[in-house]
Amino acid sequence: MKERRQEYLLVDGYNVIFQSPELKGLLDDLEHARQRLVDTLVSFAVLSGQKITVVFDAHLVPGGTTHTERHGGVEVIYTAQGETADNVIERLAGKLSASGLVFVVTADYAEQRLILGRGAFRVPPVEFWARVRQLHDEAGHAYRKDLPADCYLENRLDERVRTALEAWRHKKPSG
Image (cartoon, rainbow, N blue to C red; front, side):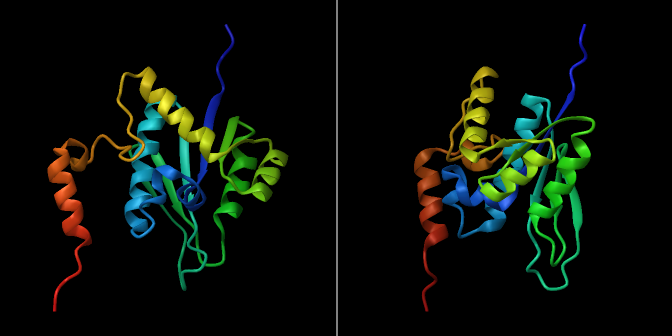
């Protein structure tokens, strides 16, 4: 019986956030958008069996240094000042392709061409979100593209309560 090769999924975090209808609505709160993407990737990792790394650019953050966090089996990398997510993803794609299949989620055409040269496969964000919905459906989970993470309290609130809280959050302070 043929042994299955390990699969890796590398995600250009901000590229996916800015290209995805699922997360575009959260652009006024990038921290929330990042957390939603990471939570979605944690679920996706469990359902897909892929080892997932998401990379967020911090190359414009003065004095920023590279740091890595782990969230539920997903590796989250923040780049250093002067280093782009593309640089990190290219390096990882080249390294990981020697030990398995590497898929890169990005809408950046130049990046897609570079990772193909590193032995990786490209996955546009629209295809990634379709796969997320498919895996959730196969697992019997309801997937709502506006609320992708089951662990959020807002996913369990009555619609009237959620609407009232959302209106309150957007209310301008008086005075």
